[in-house]
Image 1 (cartoon, helix red, strand yellow):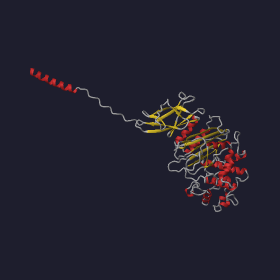
Image 2 (cartoon, rainbow, N blue to C red):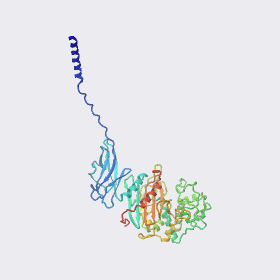
Image 3 (cartoon, one colour):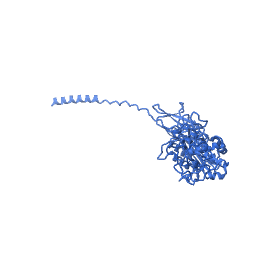
Image 4 (cartoon, rainbow, N blue to C red):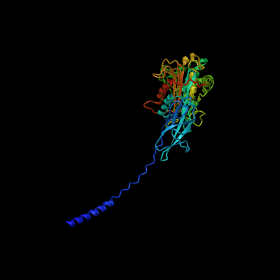
Length: 491
């Protein structure tokens, strides 16, 4: 028994020795360094009265592409401002290309012109955010900016006149995106088919001067253009000036060529060559004056009628007899190429696969080739509304003639759309679109007028609504927005 206890004691002693050796604390593993954070986003920007003396409201930025657009009240003097912003965790914000750190809610920045923040993530990646602060009416501007975002538009100009006063005028986004040239109220944008209103007004001037009538038939024997186009198809001699103005020419232009003003078959042709090319080929689908069928060619012909009667270039006559008497000095034919654009003419952008500069704008002069500032568009509307407050350029009888709907198609008069099915009550208006622009000019019957023009046009829909339809809806919303300043910017 003693021997057994001796062995047991030895065993326990050895076991304890082993336990003592294994009882040392296990060292903690070295912590694995976390990967540098990659976030480099500014998720919101605001300016507040508490940080900016004289500011009367909290103003929130609206992100459009890479630019935060901030509207501050009309009477606020934009200078050095302090911005509150939210940025990705771990990211650092600096001003422009400098290393000067910008601290949210603390650092003053000169906001009187476009500037940008550089956001640097922990991993060194950078992202630029531009900030565009302008005076305006925030609720109005947000409607425009949302439309631009939905349809990926780089720039837009909007002007509003009321009873002879220019009560609101603003540019949004960029006139030249690559060079960060902001869109301003003086920039000129292509009008596309809004150009037709100027052609119609030029025709009205000739009628008022006794040099033309709505019943004249330009291709009939002895007609204004008969000698210039002697070999066109029979039936064209029936077409009247009224038919051309109302888009009721009768041509079967669905096939060869479809809209000759934009057909590849007529590229390189002059206006006169295009007219001859088309009218030698067109047969008639209906009797002139009995159906509405929108026609760019018809307005090209009207431009040549004006030139034949006056002996002047269409552009010159239109400017002298319509635009300039209304005080609208920017109305002119747009440039064909980006390289040849005029001072204050926007750069125009087309969707991928399209060319914004692929058309001869001189050939489109009277049907879709003009450009102007939106201020000048509402000047013209103010000059043809028949109301006091702005000098009129036509007598009431001319306005009645121009704005009376066609007997055949009640939604179009002489160069103007009207009687929309659900929007713009009491308004006459015109839309326009071409690669690089979409336009809308609204002449309100109550003296309230608006023009909105983009320097791009997309062909995709947003929530099932095309840009063309959405622009009319936006135009209706903005036309009904009456909480605007009373100051007259025309002065």
